[in-house]
Image (tube, one colour):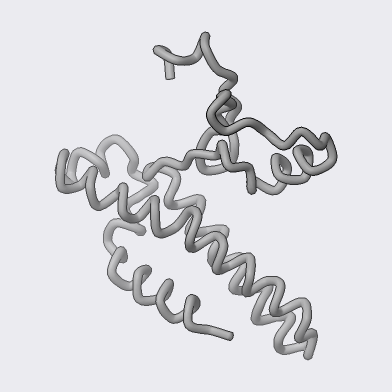
Length: 140
């Protein structure tokens, strides 16, 4: 970040950063740009493995919302929540889990846990989380 920080705009976002470049420009339409940015849907959004705990917490929150909507009979709202869950899985959870696996292979689990102790629950339950992801991706 220090190397490219003076050449591009970098803004913090939940779970990662938004890097504005000429390769992936923001929408020219101000309303669309604002919407994409505020809901973390921007194509310039980059995530990092050390934010997997935040992404997983978001995943669990969306599951609770989905279940609540479904229980109340709000089919349309529950479907929207399911769409959000699947989007979070595709754009954040799977890439962050994959990156976490690579970092563990490269640096070792102890090094990662020492540097990011908040990841211990995710690291210890990675396989269960992947199974949970598969179950949610198959839901209709």
